[in-house]
Length: 309
Image (cartoon, rainbow, N blue to C red; front, top):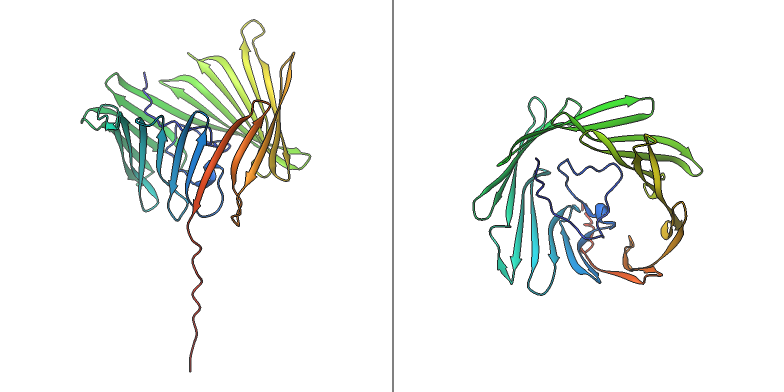
């Protein structure tokens, strides 16, 4: 059985369309719904705090998840020539580093003949946790992940099936279908929309599904959830969310089920940066709030060269 040693972000983390957790990702300011030369972003909610730091290229370098006054997780990201080569997650309990739950991920990259990435996960108390080998095809697509840990070896394979304007990615774990992701395009009222249908399976049998529709600006338009009905042998809709925007900003989300309909309204306050970012979000009627404290890199002054003579 595969173990997953992953870092969980708070709700400010926005996964882009088609992003899959199986792949090694380098996160940028855009992945956190941020614009411009952001240096850091502190997210404050009614259930915790999390901060993110970025380099001048907009790439994530550090996260801090603050659970309370004495417990926190700190993650560091190290890069070389645009590649992620190291990720360290340090867990502090009662302000003391917990070596047993802190870990380091090391990445070795080989590009000949095809791209291959070797990831080793080791705890701070020197215990080997897991090794993952990522293999890519000639087109640069992830084709296989070989996972080794104390419980044995697992193999995850990726199959890509194009059909007209669609691409289906089927993910198998030890030969058993686990997930199928179909990405397609269709014409909407305001341009071409991207449709991502994700079906999940348990022991190869269909279980649940989710369909997401994104507009031409990559903003979510609808998100619908399905559950597989064994008797009817089909996926049945459970609820559908409709996202409405005003001047490109999320205004409300309408959730519909067979018997109910509810509305959440979103109120944003923006900063004065040239590429504006929201610094406060209130969702009514629940009145939940999120505040962001954003710091920017200073604008570099343009050097003016003069030719004399």
